Length: 325
View: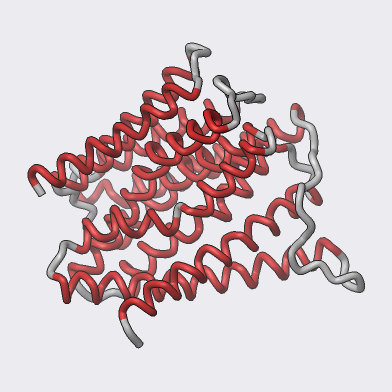
């Protein structure tokens, strides 16, 4: 099977499966009585975060080379980089294309997600400079921190947010089978598709890195997130178009919270977790862009301008690669 066919197959399977997964978890959120903050920041975010989570896990768990570890680290750090920069910029473009300046946000869920991201991702970065005996403990702290954050999101959602029915029918709805059961079946099938797609994608990146003699880290930090972050970006654009800004932002910031804690924890467990200069640069730029958006939101001055400017952080990273890579 050709390299291009493996790459395209993995990408298509990931995107289609993520769409079905997101649709399924939206219905599960409605069935479980969760508000839009929890649906966006937790359920939808987890669904669309799974593809970029599975890529590094597959690379580090089943790869047997330093290239596989580099692909894993690149995917771990590339996802927050894309979300904190290009995803916010695209949301800003969505606002601009619909003639809106300020997003309509409710419940403070975005601020909670970003605050958690700043603390957790900062800890994950710092772990790379600490002695190895500390790593397992700090990885457990990251996972526990996310569980506490998720519980807080659900607790606030049940007490303060309105339960909103999904805007789309369940993709696999069958009249004779209860909706709740079909939702679980759809989620399970989509998860299986994402696992297989992630496996294809890792195989293609590993072969491309070997044949082109390009760093596996650079391929995975730039190429992989472009494919795996498409579900978050596309869903957020659709939600912005429908005026559901809380869901649009929550889908991105909720995925960032997961990518800043659980995914780095897996990397810490599966690799030596020693960040090079480029890995530190990618992580630092992602952290800085998130801090920029959080600062603007705290000042009640978040608008399409600061969101568009988040893309400059990503351009800064590309500029560093072109200049010194």
